[in-house]
Structure formats: C-alpha cells, structure tokens
Image 1 (cartoon, rainbow, N blue to C red):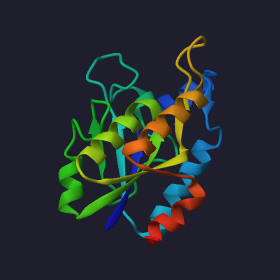
Image 2 (cartoon, one colour):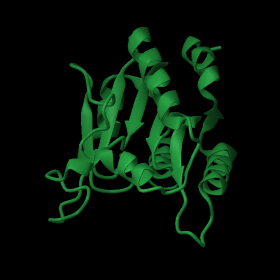
Image 3 (tube, helix red, strand yellow):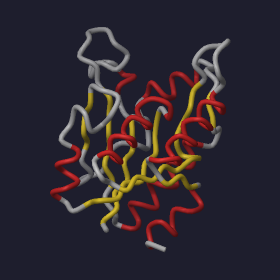
Image 4 (cartoon, helix red, strand yellow):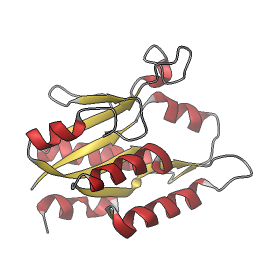
Amino acid sequence: MATALLVIDMQNFVTDRINQGVEMFPHNAIENMHTVLETFRNSLNPVIHIRHHSTEEGSLLHPDSPLSQPVKGFEEKPGEPVFVKNTSSAFSSTPLLTYLKNHAISRCIVIGAVAGFCVTSTVRAGADAGLHMTVIEDAVISFALKESGPGAKNILDVTLALLAADFATVIATTGLSEQLSGK
C-alpha cells in the first residue's frame, strides 16, 4: 500500500493570521509539519501539495495575492505535484483522486491548515473515496473562530474526534515512523 503526504493549504494566509494574533493550536504545529515533511522527503514517499486559490479579484487567496503563496519551507520540490483547489475539499475541484489511483496510492497522511475546514473536508472526501486517511494531530493548525466563539483547541479536539470516529486514523508526529513502516 503506497503512502503519500498531503500538505494542505500551507500558504501565507496562515502566518498572516498568526501574526495578527488569531488564537491557534497546537502552538508547535508548523514545527511538527516541517518534521513530517522532512521525514517524508527522506523516506522517498511522495509529497503532494494542495493550495487554495480563489477566483475572486481582491481575495486573500487570489493567485495574485502574496497571502496565497506557500509559507517559506513549504514550497514544492522538483517532482512534488501541486493541486490547486477552489473548494474546501482537495478532492472536489482537482484531479487528486485520479492522480492517487494512477500512482497506486491508497493511503494519505495529512498535515496543514485549517483543521476545521479544508483538512476535515479533504479527509472525509478521501475516506468516502475508499482511501486510508491518517491525520497528524499535532501537525494541523486550528484557529479560533471569533473572540466569543469556540477556541482553537476546542475546535481541533472536536474535529479530530469526529475524524477518528469514522474517517481517519489520528496519530501524533512521533507515531509517523511506525505508520510509514506499516506496523
């Protein structure tokens, strides 16, 4: 069973929110994402980048916006495909599923942003398509919705619990080596 890493929406809007002081959790998520990305690249397993672009002029995620560009350190390397989506799920508006099937990839490990939105949509759609989905719980970012709304940790906890209930395996960064070895 071939395994690929899906790096979801690690674009400058993420660091912009953090710099604006929007509550995020876990605080070491980006560091953990770098660790996971390096582990995948060293293991020679495929790395696939997913990016969100809006067609609306002036949108933060319009391709012309600097906030739509990849976060430093999350740029694709030669041979790493990039799928550009305009929906929450990477499977809804890209040929990602066809790519995975054509490359006999049936297991996806997911990191990125934002847990309660594009990460959960992609994981659920992947599971519905028959893929084995794994989420690295400390390598996905959650943001608080509003000052009076649920906090980032609460959103992440609920999101991961729902995904673990029926859609994905949820592990910590430290469990990645075991997942890659197939144990």
